[in-house]
Image (cartoon, rainbow, N blue to C red; front, side, top):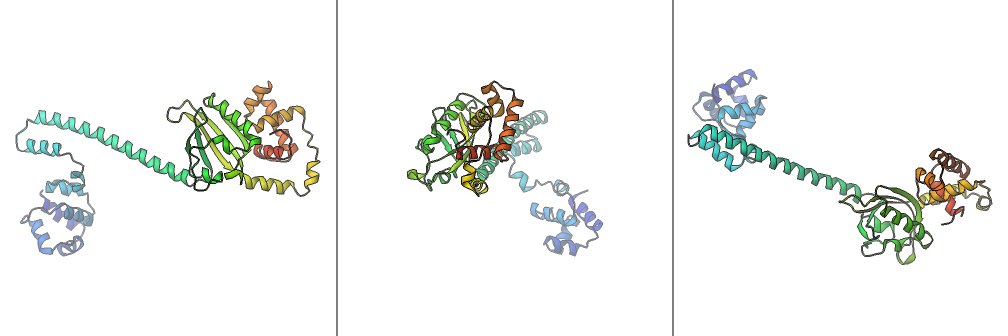
Length: 326
């Protein structure tokens, strides 16, 4: 069966006249009639595609009967492969050797395609990453072992009050409030020497020219052992407004609050101090030579006695009320 015969068969199966099909495809009725009768060769690729769409059939079948290759395939077909196929068709190439060469080229193309897909995937991941980071209100800093700034996310300068100015070239510890500098420096130095560790703390910053400081919740991950990072990744969240909310919540009678007896035990006071340094329960247990279960019990009591729901709120309240030294 040739192209014209198959075209007529598909047209009749779909209940279309030659005029109806020609109208759908955008060709003349006379031209379509000559194609079906074999008086004209198969049309160009675009028309074959439109015929297949109008007849709701697989275009590959029509392209095969027309002995044509779809243009979208030709765009990706290496010239060497086309040359090899022509040589085989014209008898200038032995079938076995041609087949071997064709397989080799297909393998090469597969490698090239895999690499192209990987590069495209990596590019898409980077676009996705930047879409998340560039539009996040939280900030990210990456510091090396010498506490030098390797990376800052776009929101970092805004968070620290340096609108429009990069933090590049600044001492990262120079934006920390003097009262909190020791705790922050100790945490970063410990993480720089502890690959894989994570620590959290709440501290204050110094804005531009010492103004506009904020209250920041920091979560720092030591990734110094990862070649692609080689630093400490610090996620920063501005909780200044939350701090104000806590003051409002507990500050209806500020004087009474100051005089309130929280009745923390000595052990609970030690645990609270380590919580303020960002240590996890297992680390606190290690420091105080206690079981993790005991530390969890102390933390639960601290939250209950301070009247808060989270560790962050407990530390913020304790620092504000000077229950612990900054």
